[in-house]
Image (cartoon, rainbow, N blue to C red; front, top):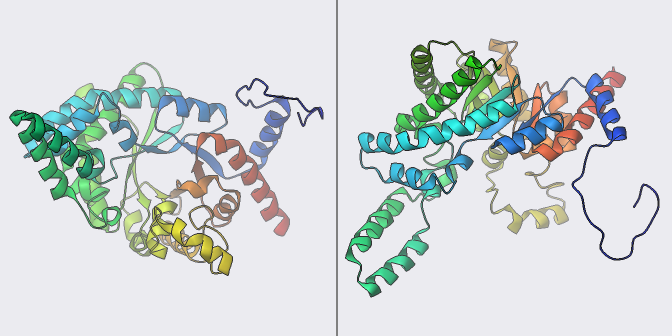
Length: 385
């Protein structure tokens, strides 16, 4: 026990870490000094409530795809993916709607009065289907048992898995490209968001939904997506006889989006830098494969840090500066955040503050660290003047 200088022999009972009086006081001082906002990445009510308790000022990234993997909803998700036409897709999405709405009700309750930035579906559809190897194994078992009905069903799924296969899925049919191809998916999610917001607002709660469209690289992608989002939102509000103040923004995670940020800003209520994908697309590094060579690069002095752990200020950071400057040249008050892993890393947080970011978003347990680093950064900038 470092507090009292004691050494315990053997195993002692563990308790969940808490913010004690001294830390709470330090965080209060930090909050009084800092100007950088701190939000959290949270996909469920429990994480949202924990983050709020730890001082988060809202949700900077709520990933809706994580909600789709629940045992009660993956069958409906797969039914939607397997659908052969829009009518069948809408039928499957109708089953998902109440589940998505329930998700948002819980998260909005946990974050009452604070902004909740919800990223609508981002990953490619094949991620929600079983692996082909797994299906092939199941097919062999069924062929041995002679269950013809299930054999045809599995073959149909295998065919769909093959049709969705991409050579480079992270740069393929995902993000807003999915929403433009299958607008009914985003329409269902927006309906769930606005219905949940209307229900809680009617009950006297203050709800602040921010709908974020992912992987935008062309302004027309955002304008078309935003048009669909607003059309659905207005329709739901008309049905409920209510008016909700919602925002529609985008992630900036492609170099092209940075270069045309002034065009994109005309359509966006806010920007959020997705620094994970921006790092991938700037370096041409695959986040899932860098472990094979980055340690060697660090040892050889090619890279000082793992670029997915510590933000690359010279390259990715310069792009961010361009995006901020271009975006605010059109909308001076444009709200801009960071929602990648870098949002909880001290050096990256300090850099974000220096270049004019409004808030960082990090995992719940990193929120106290971000609050302190944000205060330190404010003090350093004041002392430098």
